[in-house]
Length: 351
Image (cartoon, rainbow, N blue to C red; front, side, top):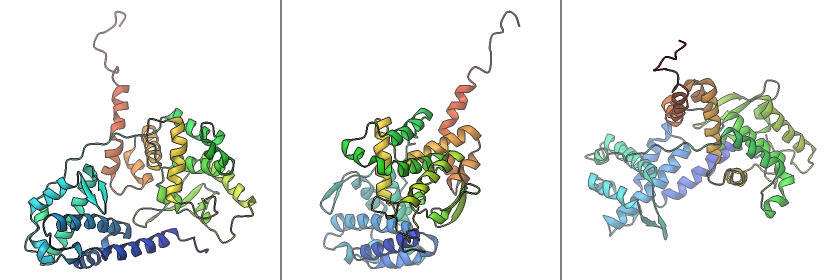
């Protein structure tokens, strides 16, 4: 296969390099921690841990151990971090400065950073290297349910029409719309017709598809693979893009990526985010529509049509059906409305 055919292997290699770079800024014992959790976490998860711990140890260096840099902190210092210190850290995250930038964390970002800190404390406590696991005493910040933002059925049609005719695009975007519209329609249709994640879409290769039974192979979070199926409408959009690629002599023969950028390389996550935002702003300027919101749109439609939360969880690749229920339980309001007039209190005269 070509050099860009194994997207996930290359992404992991890149993230491992980032982890090595971040470890240069962290206390030396963090390397032991990451090695200890390696067999039960993905590379992407460990990279997230590094970013969270970098903020945590920067805080400790500024607020508690002021004569030490983050790199100089030891396990003995960690043993002196109590639950109050961690509570102060969570409060600090509301407005803090890091590497010259003023930043803020919402409740979900705080909860994730606390989860990372807890995981590290628990690891060293279980190893007998900390006398107490003080992080376990700190409650998780209360998380408020996020409203599900999605496209309504007429907006789904509108966003595909916008990609087709380009009406409403800026002069700059309109100048290259004719070159990209078939690809863009294929991307939007695949999102809206299958609910796949953006990483799954970007990682698709030409060999991922079987048009004999309208199936394709995706690599899920954590590296597991799954075969999904698509409709004839999705097949038509993908086939149109495939036909365009086959006629374009500038497509490198050894390029296995399915979706290509204008530079004829695998399209990036950022580029896909930008194209979704570009068309969504035209048809629904008040909604902040992202690729994940297109996934929510599909999940909502599937749940409305089937009423089967387990099927939705399976198709979307959720390991825990409670994750699915949390996201789509709000749709049961539609069902509640639909039965509002089902029970009659007064009988009509002719009954």
